[in-house]
Amino acid sequence: MYKDTDKRKSIALAFFDILGTSQKINSDQYDEIYDFYSYMVDLCSEEQIAISFSNLPGHTRDGSDIVLSIPMKHAFFSDTFIIWIEYDELFGMSLRGFFEKCMHIFTEAIRRGIPLRGAISRGDAIMHEEKKLYLGKPIVEAARAEIAQNWLGIGVTRSFEEMCVSEARLVLPYEDHIKESHFNSIKEYDDVLFVHCALDWPKYWRNMYDEDVIPFIKRMNNNYAFSSYYDNAIKFVNYSKENEDFWEDKLPPTPPLKPFIVSYD
Image (cartoon, rainbow, N blue to C red; front, side, top):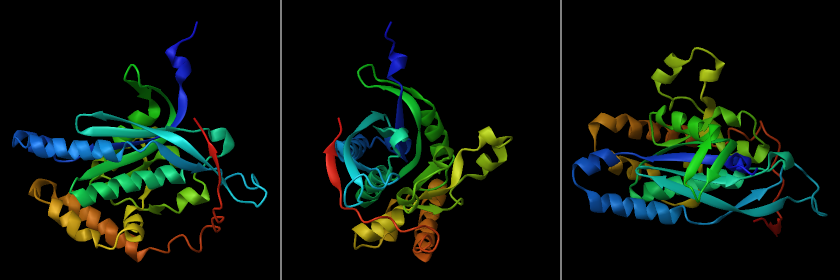
């Protein structure tokens, strides 16, 4: 007999929280919240992400990567939303395109004045859109990791202990965003949520936009009780700039991308 559990797939997932929503609801700012949510839904509605086989050289005659265009899904739950893609670890897919999409959503939210905190994970899950049933370790891991951070940013969970070169170039070793309470709660290896790095969204910002991101962050910092989130985001912005060439002498060069595009449904 066919069961829904047979729909378990390998996914890469990002779990985001829109910070400050409860405060706005208590202040009866429903129009602003609605505008925020509508904008985020539109931002997450692009349906395709480019995923390459950079782990498997020689797929094409000129030695370049094969790039697949695969669908991205999303779901919203009050002030939380997730985005995910299905992928196949067997063929060594690089998730660089997914990392970039996460950073694009994050930076566009900052430009709009929407504070986000997120975490990325991967693994097997059931993502049953028709039944609105989402079940799996990547969701649990990312949800726990999201709330264990003290900043605006995107943490990387332990499920990404191994990365290919093109993925690693989009992260930066870092751990100052992790709440001290998480470190104190670690009793054994299974309690560890993070690899000690984060998506380098400030570098993505510098490559995409001409404006300085720090004024955008400061304008969102309007609640003293949570000012550390914004201060720590600015700290990471400066750290990213100071370590812009961190990987240059540590990773082999990423092959030039002359993609052979194929469809993937």
